[in-house]
Length: 108
Image (cartoon, rainbow, N blue to C red; front, top):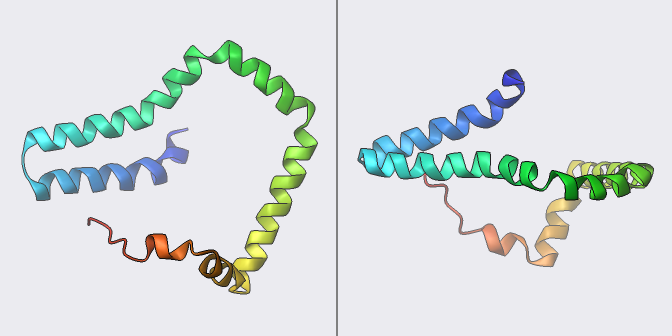
């Protein structure tokens, strides 16, 4: 379990600690770590609180799993082919989605 989470948690936590160190103060670092902890733990708490309702939704997924697996697998292969042929970039350009992220500059 820990090995599977290492690529997800390690770089994000390192980035947060680096931001806290570079941008000053323990209070800012504590605020960033609180937001990180809430984002990491809150989904688990919400699932735990709604587990009985979730079981009803999961029964629907169990009954129709072959459809979910087939559709998601087909989408995965289609997007992979679009990426390999550079058509994904062209599609996103025509839809105007790339304009939303062109000015994005990572904070680090």
